[in-house]
Image 1: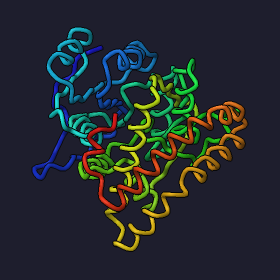
Image 2: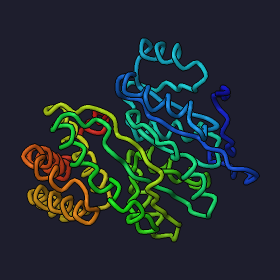
Image 3: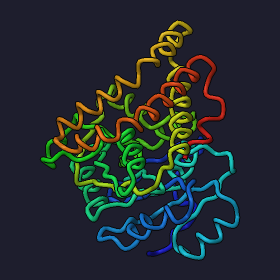
Image 4: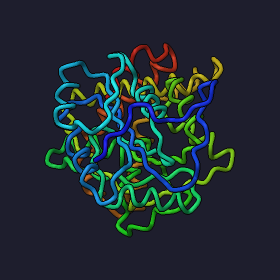
Length: 322
């Protein structure tokens, strides 16, 4: 893969993106790297040798010099951007997007492996006039029950239906770790990420302004990482606490009070929502019931995190999300 200059994005004097000429579509893949290198390599190797190669891959990390040296030794032609050790994942993504130059910006995670049609599907859908494209996510670490329970807790909404085209369309869900954006949306996306908000808040704004969204199950990622029980308990707590703080920015004190106490009923509500989703998709229903005892702990940890987030703020939880 041809090496890219470290700063190829075009900006105006006030720091905003200049519009990229729409001569031909080019793809930039942004990966925030916070987990061990062995979790990153399967997805990165697949990107490099894939049928549709990205014009540039930008990996942004808060890892130290030792991990960075190991990365550069293995991937000398991939752009690695170093950030402060306390940088949140949202800001790592923003750094990568600002440094990118592609007419299509694709965001994923460091433990996800793309399918053969991943980038081709994103490119085709953007070429059809859609502004944001999201895809499906399947579990690729499937030997232990606790890993299945963690995956279904987070991604039951994103798995493929038995009928692969059933979920495709403009009303489909858009996972934050499997999404492609048209370049002219990059400014607003970066402002959202720099405010330590997840992409979903920006997507909600875009929907209100009439931007075109599409979910295509051929834009498929495989989620490949283990989740030990207590590790995922902590991750679920910190993610949900940070999410509550993000949402609280639009709430008055009474709203925070209502959402805070309402968090107590989240575990059964979220479990039922996941079950309804899988029944509609006609997949994994038996496995979902088998995972329920573990999911009860995971969902309860998340509910506690949200409650604390609404009442006391996010603390440093966002920086601890991996």
